[in-house]
Length: 98
Image (cartoon, rainbow, N blue to C red; front, top):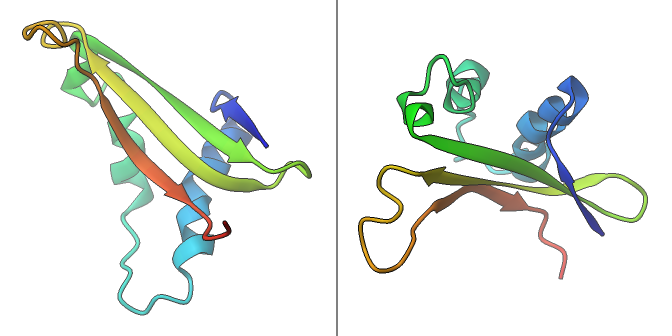
């Protein structure tokens, strides 16, 4: 397995489409709008970027198939307000295969 940073348009597509594969059989899952998700990662639309940054990764198996995703966030303005530097983690999803 490998972690791959989301850089290309194809990577973004893989990041966006993974939940569709994971939850396709779950009748209670409601897909968020793609534009709402992409706005989180758009520096022009997300005010957090004024003082922060983020990175997204794909988890891929040995054949190159995407099997997971995750994003890490840090707001430099608030990250060091406490004794413990603090950031955030989100958009974590992966296939159920232990």
